[in-house]
Length: 282
Image 1 (cartoon, rainbow, N blue to C red):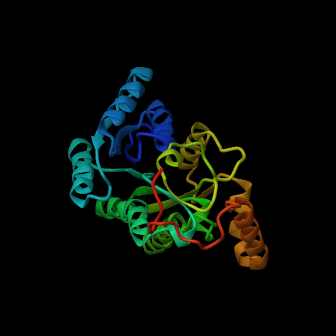
Image 2: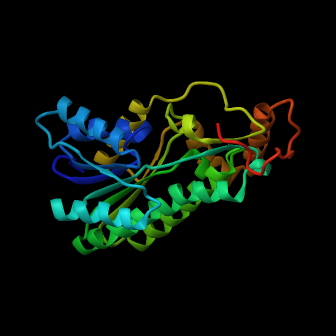
Image 3: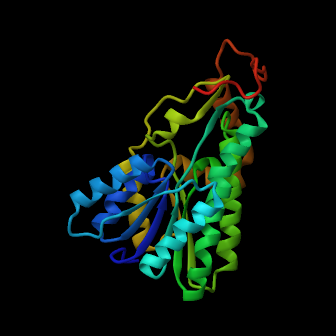
């Protein structure tokens, strides 16, 4: 796909992978509509990109909460009204909760699902009629390695990404002859603000180690869009998990149990609830 001149909607564009995607897309001449809840931050991102690439179309910033169906409809409708159509939707908006499942409240699950699953679903349902009618289009769903298998202390996040994976695969099969493509992206741990604002419910600590720079992840996603990739695994571990979960499930289970033991807080017994269901937000 040649990105120049393509109408692209990008959600979750105010930070992390989303923010990192703005620059390479604008550089390549995309006609970009960027969306996120934080309007002021979003406007700053758009301004920076426009100043950096003055010969490219400036991004249009639209404050939008993807959990608000009316706002999503307005986001897509506005892009269609301005540009005539939507060529690419990049579903990137996301939130997380981290900690023991026993401390994760049902409301925590709902909050994560509302953004990561229902928000992405709402965006897809808004753009798909336009894409199907025209007989072409691309949906890029930024998932996670956590969509492939339950990861310790990320139960709500895994549930949301797994749900989005399942729907994405259904849509991909149903629209196989329509000209509309679905690309699935599986990042590993990425240096992103999502970890600063995620809900911490307790019982475990974040894994140490190297987190991939968001800029590098964004560059690989843009390149995958250009070459027409179907699935993009951004880590060797992610690719290995996609293979081993089918060929050698016991190996994956042993690895997950090892992770759980390593990350569990030593002074907190497994399964013990805090004083309040769901813990406290950091």
